[in-house]
Image (cartoon, rainbow, N blue to C red; front, side, top):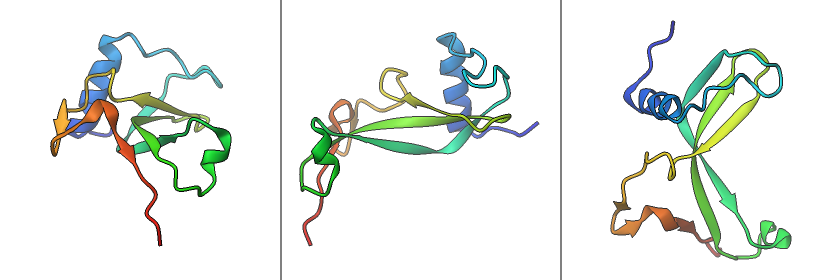
Length: 103
């Protein structure tokens, strides 16, 4: 069995507490791993904003859980899981944004 680091264990603990341990929706197996890195999910209000337009993208910080059998990837938003500090560098983490840098 692989030993989890502190971040991974916190994610497992919160998902367990929230009863979010159902089998994989694709293969129905229960062999999961929590990745040791996060995925910044970029969101846009309009489909065309996905192209390089310079528009502001909202970022949803997510934990990555992968099915060990079929590789299905599940993303869990860290904000409602309570896994983000309320503020980071003076910025409210519930309103994270990123702007495209102009070259």
